[in-house]
Image (cartoon, rainbow, N blue to C red; front, side, top):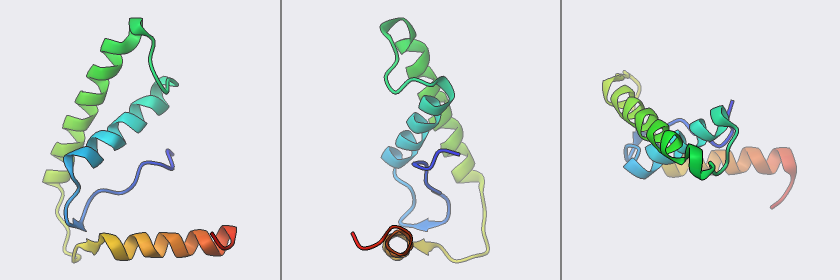
Length: 90
């Protein structure tokens, strides 16, 4: 699992276009093994990022939940606290 890819569904405010694209980029990087593709692979890499982002947007728009949306700031604070507990003060 890509640790840098975060859950984007059921948050208030909803995931931004940039967040969807960043997650898609991380996913394609993980699959391809390239942090930055060579010139020969750049077009295929960029196309894959756009296709994954489109699929992600479709998925996020199609999902439903009976749970109330999570607060981004509260979830970020919880993650920081878990990190602090795990790795010590930072």
